Amino acid sequence: MTLLIKGMVCNRCMYVLEKELTILGFEVVDVKLGEAIIKDTVAFSQKLGAIEAMLKSNGFELMSWLIMVLICNWKVEYLQNLQLL
Image 1 (cartoon, rainbow, N blue to C red):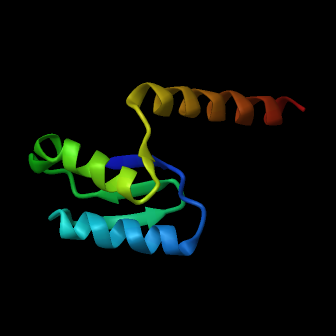
Image 2: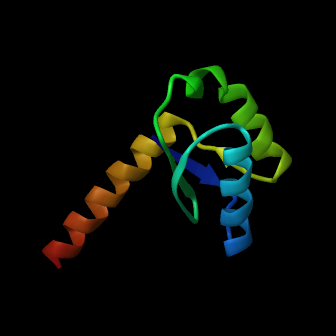
Image 3: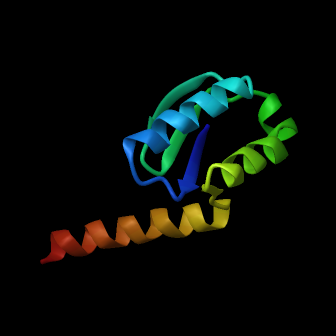
């Protein structure tokens, strides 16, 4: 499962996020600026509040699914426009 995270700006952000997700009991597959991939588990929905609280306490914010869809759509349109130039 991919989480889009607002507020990640450096390598330390990635380190903190990976460590905190591990503490919450998630298997972290990969962490990049603005994104964390965790192994999809049933615990995600049960721990969503804890994830959001952890992110907030570290200065991050979980982006909503709607925002993620809008960003993906924008990227597709942008790339299509580049090919037309």
